[in-house]
Length: 166
Image (tube, rainbow, N blue to C red):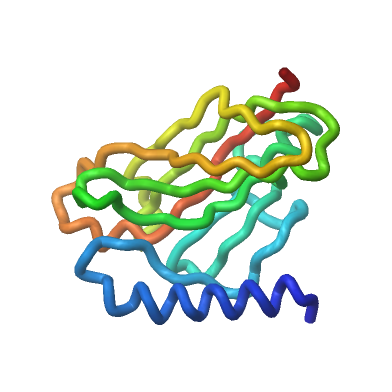
């Protein structure tokens, strides 16, 4: 088992224990050791109670170019849940351009899903700049329009991502 997998398991166990008691406060869910980067996820990066946290993979819609695949591999969902007001679904995204030799602007689409798999909302981040050799953090946020308390929203996925050099 690689060191990054051990770290992922440890961090996710801590997150799971922390968030299990906070379920009533409408905050995210846990994850397991299906993380990593590469082309193994059929729907881009995801985070949630479904038991997977991943970055990378190909977009579930249409063909993907090399730039899109690279962009998906660069993005990790750090948190998924609600903002302090409880009215907006929010995903904190880490965009890693440490291996890049060019500055990029990223366009990212995040989908928030219910336990049943139904899409609860979609958020976009456009033209997010990340300098070569750096990592940037941003949030994708969209209003919660459901009729429940939000506890049914348990997963975030990076549906699409692309990058262009600046």
